[in-house]
Image (cartoon, rainbow, N blue to C red):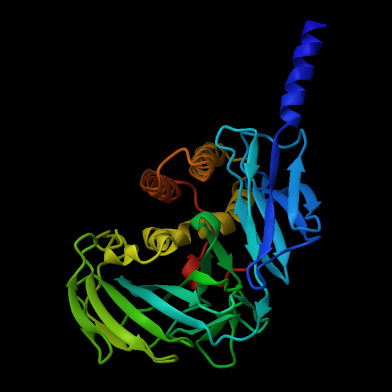
Length: 399
């Protein structure tokens, strides 16, 4: 009877775990009545842990024994085809409040612009790797999410050896791989990612041929850019440009810096790069780019800059892992490395949970997360390789 009583008490305590809040329409400033909601478990592969609807005044409530106070959840609201999420933070309590703002959708792109952008060009052997980051601002008033089935962000790249990869910064600054669609003309591409009011961080990566020791950068996007920085590695490469002005050298990475301001929509990032590049095996051009004063503008932009050189790793792991696993299943070496990789990925997920729950400061969170990603890089370099694996920048990525 005592054991039964203890179990009943534990079950009662568990049943008291609740998640509640309000869903508001940020365009109309009214509560969202009768909107379907899902409680998502990222650790469970984005599985739905519970479902509910808001009431007539936009309020909702999740409760039940299946909700674990120690778990990590996201409340998801889908409105007019756009996903909106809010992280659940119990912070040691049995109840959490998550309020989410959704917006009316629009096909009008007049309110879009790029506050700041960065381009990293790193020559290595007979290839040059180009990574671009854009802080896209949606300043629509009243605020609306920009959606367009034909593509919300169009870009042009020059000399890419394959379809470029693309990603967006999502909730908690996690990279979200995006499907890249080719345009009518060579080098034209677009992604269909809903641009919500405020700042949206988007990234593009590709590689081009550098066997001749020369590369002409002529990329552009269909949005005006307030400030654009170009980082070139190795720093000894010659850069000829009528757009960029030399701006010294980055103290952290050693990259040569160039800047351009107030680029019109469609204006190319024109620059001619030439010179000898270190071999791919030498490791002389390893990039350790750290954000500078640009971080003061937006917190999501800070996160993007911290991850700009490692974001492809996260996408690479998520995309290549199933095929890598299938090709090496049953191997003792595979099992050993799989266990190590699983441990690192689980540790990273735990770190994300602690940060979402407010248990660790932001500075420590990003420091430890970057260290974990560096360990994953080292592990993948030493581990067994698939028979044929292209780099992420050298091929397209499905959603």
